[in-house]
Length: 167
Image (cartoon, rainbow, N blue to C red; front, side):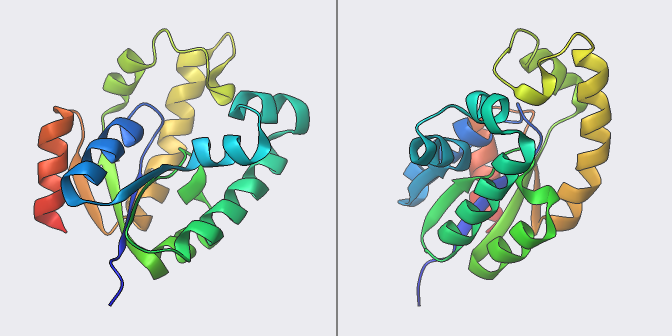
């Protein structure tokens, strides 16, 4: 039987990319960051895609990438912050593996993203307010999608060990 995928979800800044790379090494899987996957296909950054073509276009690319990656097995996938807010992406990933929510309090996210200017949805004057509103909107969707929830406010190594013991 093919090895199931592990799909990491959570709000931007929760550690999906960092933990995903470490987890993949620990369990002997390939790691794919969904945003980097899309950037490579489009030969543009996520910010450039948003600026040039808008969020709806990016979300369509994200849906296509979710379908393509869920057809593979044995991957650790860091889903984008908005990926699992769409039911069709959740369904695709649930067919191919386990969805793990990296749960981090909004205060920790705010501290981690304090100087980050690369995230299109937060690149605005009211960054803190926008982040909290988006977090409050997305968290219940992440919780509904997740098969496993881990506290990701701790060290990446400890989070990986928690994920491994939960799988």
